[in-house]
View 1 (tube, rainbow, N blue to C red):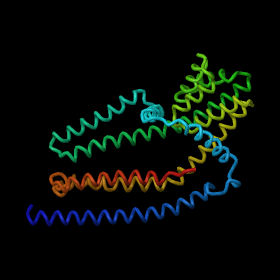
View 2 (view 1 turned 90 degrees about the horizontal axis):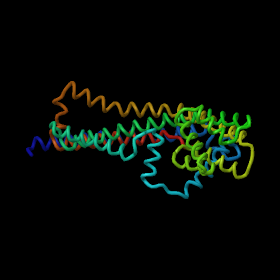
View 3 (view 1 turned 60 degrees about the horizontal axis):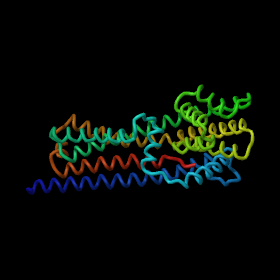
Amino acid sequence: MSREELINTIVMITVFGLVFSTWCICVLLWLGQYLSRLKRVQKRLGIVKKEADESRTLRLWREMQKDVESETAIKKPTFWDRMERLRHDAGWNTPIQGVILGVAGAASVAFAMTYYSGGSIQLGLGVSAAIVLVFVMYTQKRLSKRAALFERQLVDALGIAARALRAGHPLAGAFQLVAEETADPVGTIFSQISQEQSMGLDMKDSIRKVADNTQNAELKLFATAVAIQLGSGGNLAELMDSLASVIRERMRLNRRARVLTAQAQLSKRILIALPILLFVMLNIVSPEYVQVFYYTPAGRYMLVVTVAMVSFGSWAMSRLSVLRY
């Protein structure tokens, strides 16, 4: 390495260190502002008050959620069980092994095409990681959409079940009516419950089995409440109405929380898009200026580290904008 190349490398590392230090300082300042805003948001939502000051809906939700967690904590699902639940919640019809092999195959093909077209190993790994990241983001978006759809359908399904029970139908008949009147995914779940009950499986076991195969908190709450009511006796129609009221209140609170965290989500998107757009513009306007990132070892490592830092920043800001209640 000549003296000029050594000086250029030292300058690049120094500039990178200054940019990284500035980024860390900005993140720390943003974190301090976020924590202060979070406290104000929690006060406005009323989730930092004492138990005596909480609304009836939140208190009912937390008490029943503790029962659900205590029952599910006994069984520790394996990795493949968690992946299967994730596939079920995302609505994939392909088995989880096929999904994983498909993503791995796409990442491998992208790596091979990048490497054999003149790119480096680091660039190929970056492209493969980008494909996996895009798939994860798409899966998370799909999960959130299906979860919102599930909540809306479950509220309507509980209303149908309550009216059917008041009309004199048995619980199995009410579930069968819900399966006929409701589309996927709630209709499929109630159809499975009805089929298993018609084959001789106990109603409580069937409902609990369906709830264990999903990560939806509302369905677990429904399964626990129905199991307790079937064991102790009571008015199932009123139970359905109460559950629908709790879920509606939770949906309203979720919408309010999304509005209050919209600023953090917008800031995340802007901060993530700025370096990407700047790098693309530099490649278009002045390709020779960014050739150092492609044809020198130091530039390749800096590019890989930059992608890792942007990905970590996106993950950290997404976690910080989640309200726990």
